[in-house]
Length: 472
Image 1: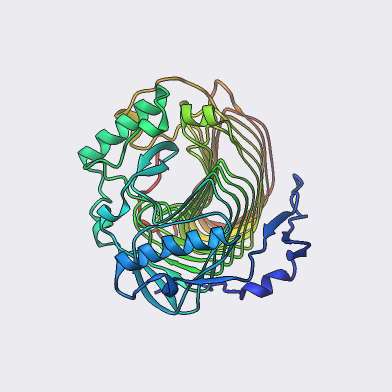
Image 2 (image 1 turned 60 degrees about the horizontal axis):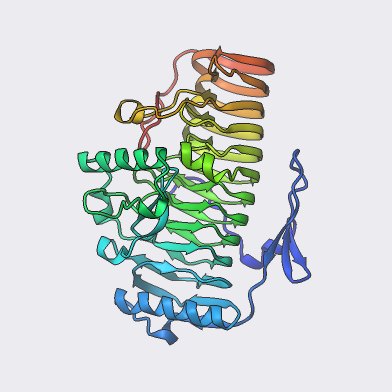
C-alpha cells in the first residue's frame, strides 16, 4: 500500500508559478536559491506526433514494439522533433534509445512494461556503475549525447523484475567484476575497454540513464520498480524533473541520482525508495578527477519522500565535486535513516561546498544530520586504496529541520587531515531523542543555535528499510 500524499499535477498547470513560456522555451525559475540560479529555458517540442502503433508496435510483442520505438525516434528526430506517443494500454518492450528533439509521451493509461531478459539489452552501451564509467547492458531508457529530450505524460514505466531480482545478491562473480572495474578506473583504462556486460558480472541496468545530454525534461509520469538506480543523469546540463511519482524498493534503488550534472531543478516529486531518495554524485576517484565535471547549481524543492535511506544524500561518489545546492520544503511522510547525509572517504578527493537545506522534516530516523568522511561500505576490504585524496567540505547549512524521533540530532565526523570547515545548524525541533545529542570530530567553525528537544528517552525502533542499509 502506498503511504502519504502523492503529488500529481497536470502538465499545463506547470506553466503557472515557477514555469512560464519565454519566447521559444519554457522558463523555470528558482529565485530563492542563496547561490543564484539562472532560469532554465526548456525546449518546446514541435506539435508533431509519432504514435508507436504507426511504426509497428503490437501489444504483448516486445520485439515489434522495441523496433517501433527505434523507427519512431529516427523519424521524429529527422523531422525536427515532436512526440513519440505511447497510447493507452500495456506495451511490452525492450530498451528504448533516444534521439535528439524527441519527447517520449506516455498517454493516460499507457504502461510500458520492460522485459527482464538480459539478452535484449545487448549490445553494450557506454554507461556507468556506481560512479565508474564502463560498457554495460543498455539501460531500459537510454540517451547518449542528445539534446532536447523528454519523458512526459501521465502513464507508467513498469519493468518486469523477476530476473533482475536474482542479481540483487552480490555474488562472488559480481564482486570480482567490481574489483576489476575499480582497478581499471584507478589505472585510467579507457571506459570503452571496461566491459562489464560479460556473463557473471551481474551489473544491473539503470531504468533511466541519460548520459552527456543537454536540455532534459522528465515530468508527470509514474515509475513502478527499477533494476538499479531509478533515474540517473550523468554529465547532463539544463535538467527539469517535476511531478513524478516514483516507487522502487529493490536493492540500490535510489530515486534520482544527479551525477556530474549542472543547472537542474527537481520539484514536486514523490519518491518511495529502497535506497536514498534524492542523491547528488560526481564520479568515483580517478574517473571523477579526470572528467572534472562538478555537480553544481541544483535546486530541489517541494518534494515528498515516503521512505528512503535519506531525504538528501551527497556522495559517496563525488570526486569531481558538488557545490551550490539548495534543497527546501521537502518532507518524509514515513521514515528515513538520515534526513541529510554527506558521505565520502579518503579515496574520493573532490569537494562539497555551499550546500543549504531548509525546512525539511521526517518522522523517525537514526540521524537528523550526518557528515561522514569514512564511508567505504563493503569496499573497505574488497579493493585497495590506489591513491589517497581527502575531500574538502565547507559551508554547509541545515536550517529549519524537524524530526518526530531521532537517535541523534547531528554527527559530524571530519578527517583530521582536512577538517570540515563552516557548518551552520539552526532552528531544529526534535520530538523525542532516543540516543545522543551530537558527536563532532575534526570540524572548524561550527555554529549551532535554537535546537529544541521535547523528550529524551526510549521510542519506537527505526525499521530496517528495504535495499542496502548504509553504515560505516
